[in-house]
Amino acid sequence: MSGNGDQLERLADLLAERLAPRVAELLRDEMPHDEALVGPDEIARRLARSVEWVRDHAAELGVIRVGDGPRARMWFRPDLVDERLRARATPDKNPDQPQPRPRKRPGRTPPGELLEVKANPPRRIDR
Image (cartoon, rainbow, N blue to C red; front, side, top):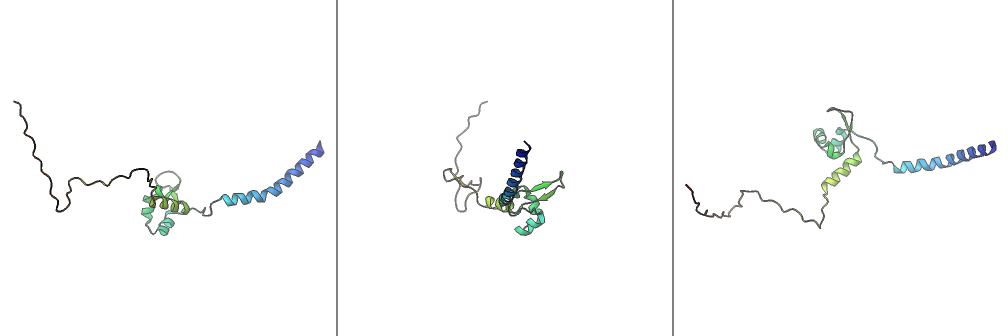
């Protein structure tokens, strides 16, 4: 039985040797190309915004917080930030769903238009 065990072990080694490069190639293809995380200052520079703006909109931009509390470090994936901004810039409009009509502000009459005045009916006063 020892002969079979040795053969099996050699076969397993040979398979591992041949499969390892292919597995590494498949894993490399699945990894996003822009893996590096950057801080709010780099995102601000890329977007031509202030660091304060980036911090105020961190959740919308896909922040990754490292640590607990109000002073947790903020990191961003640039590809995710770009994706989030594109999605925000192009809202998904469903043509089958009616679009809301713009609301008129109450109490505003366009210039040159007169308001209609209605007389109130007389009230009956009970004594």
